[in-house]
Image (cartoon, rainbow, N blue to C red):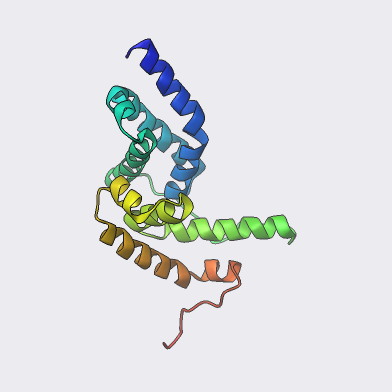
Length: 176
């Protein structure tokens, strides 16, 4: 890679690192996996930077790499994690703790979505991308984005921990 392209890549990484890690965190639900995922995507981007830099939107290209690398994670054999239902002790209930509980509920609910729905919900509502931009990132049609977003949001609405955190009654057990 030429020195000019190397400098351009380094500037891109400095400017977009934290944003890409946040997106990866929402895709993975784990800060360590998010950093690993971001590093993997950027390593792949580095190898192809000459081509990526010529594109209209290098960030969209790298974002697509994040989603693809995250999907690859599920194809590989992973070590299972043993999660507990609740932490061993509970802190006092102040506004900061409530915020953490809401965030934790949201992340748990997001983790319960299938990878494609999670990617659509994160890109569409967290990244605030248009349906066309999400479709481009994921390599699918805008109609697929709409249906996956609809299914993902419907599933999130039924998640009891999320409904309680947001003060919305759970619809589980509703006879409608």
